[in-house]
Image 1: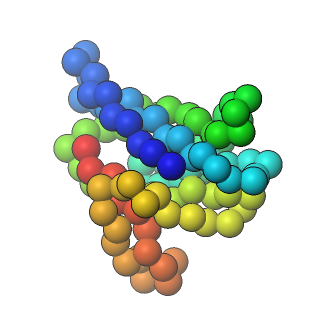
Image 2: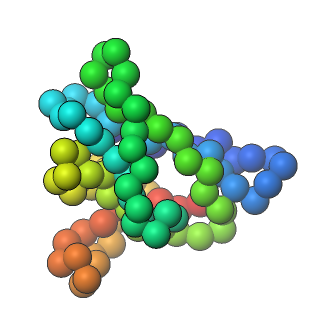
Length: 96
């Protein structure tokens, strides 16, 4: 799994690319504070990885998780982790 950030010069946004590798899954999505926890599907690549990009506003931190075949997973390479009482679990943190 990995995250890459490309800060945009023309807008106060960052293009964040999410990649989930080495999963035996039919679907992978990302959801978090940045999209009101609506699942954004990642595209399955020929090598079996899943990849997708979102433009996210900067100067904030966001909690997020991946939904891998509807099972929630955290991102080990995230900027951090934060306990979420509502979910009763840790969420990954993205700092922009």
